[in-house]
Amino acid sequence: MINSINQVKVPNSKQVRFVLGILGRSGYGKSTLAREIISKIHRKIIIDPKHEYHGLIVERPERLIYHVKVSGFSRRMNIVYRPHNEIDFEVGLSVMQKVQCYTLIAEEADKICDPHQINPAFKQITAWGRHDAQSMIWIARSPFEVNPRLREQADVIVSFRQDDLNAVRYMNSRGFDRDVSTLDKFEYATWGEVDVIKKLIGKAETGAKNTDKDP
Image (cartoon, rainbow, N blue to C red):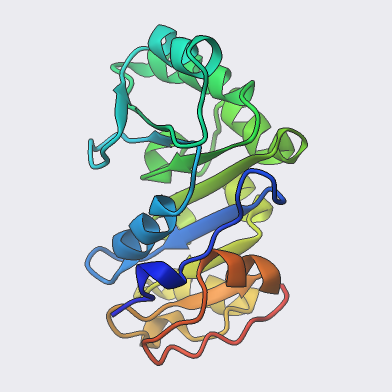
């Protein structure tokens, strides 16, 4: 199986900001690894368009404001944001942009920003979040479903199997440590900074030899 939950190590709020991308087809281990990593993170907001996560469910931006600004966004707090409409989504992102020292989880990243345009507040978090210790994990199936700004800002990208020829060519050209078209179930390839990879994922038990490489 994938890395045991005890081996998944992530930076805490006092450590350097990170951006992690997780890619892969359904059924190959992407969601399992994502949940293992997310479970180890404190003080997080999960944008959950498919209602897959548990935690403090927040559906309106005014409640989000209350929990992060009024009641106190504690270290153990796990906010799951499920906006009802586009306006609530955009206002919610504007609130998240102003929060410091937390991790934003963008599940189904292609539903949050498509490859061609990106919400201004989300763009701000992606590009300048390091100044407010705003970390991010974005999750998608293919690199081409993800806005280029997210890919460019990633410290590390983990990919499970990809079959689309263009996606395979792109990822191989970026210097992933394994050919993503040859991966079996629960195997993954990595690209990015050595230290971030070690902190976020740990050492694999599956025989997937993830040789860290600089981009």
